[in-house]
Image (cartoon, rainbow, N blue to C red; front, top):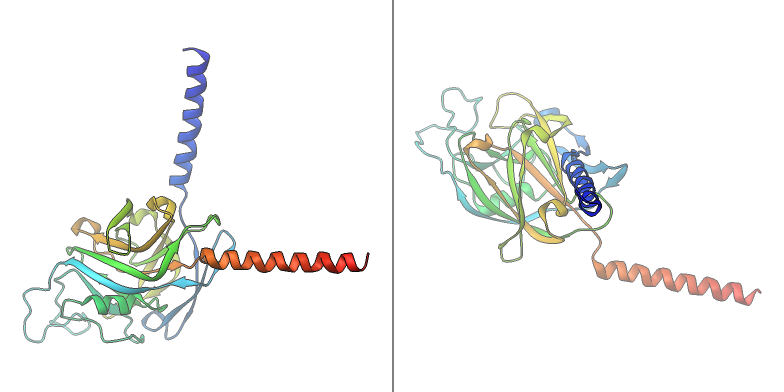
Length: 279
């Protein structure tokens, strides 16, 4: 092996170590919240802390398009999606809306009906962490979720998308989409083993006791894009029924940054003129 080949090998090894480190780092964060009525009630997201930075400006889902969703089957008279009503629980289907027993919600849960896109968007489009999408263990779905503004990358080193998963025992597939719903960038599978335990539990209508909650953070770099209009979420039966909530971090738009720069520049010029006058 000549010197140049050896040097190339060293550089390649360094690159692999860096890449492995980036992949291996858990995208963890702290959820700061206000809970009312414990695990059954409202759990309001106040902010997120990551890398000693507090994030409190979020983009929320405002539109959902369900591409496929395992339908509820074998419905009988008196069936319910609430296991606390003995003998009538129906666990068929895929994704549906769910909430804490005492939690507020924008509308009733979809219950024994397959949810509409509007219902999914309403349950994901608020800061109540006890308004979620529940997925049955053997169900599958594909849905496009659009945010109220473009999600942009920046140089802060912070994640752009934040997910919570009830039970800390399921996976979730994520890929960026553009304004038309076209897939862009890379597909990323969020694995249950990579979740970080958060400091609250939830007890929703679909379950009969409080369950722990895990979280994932995801950057646009991991998705292979610099901006996105939304994301496509997917799950099949091997994903073990993810029960999830999500928000995106709001980054100032380029025009806003230019405006702030102009203001800062004008202030600097003004100060220099004042100094000149007194010189």
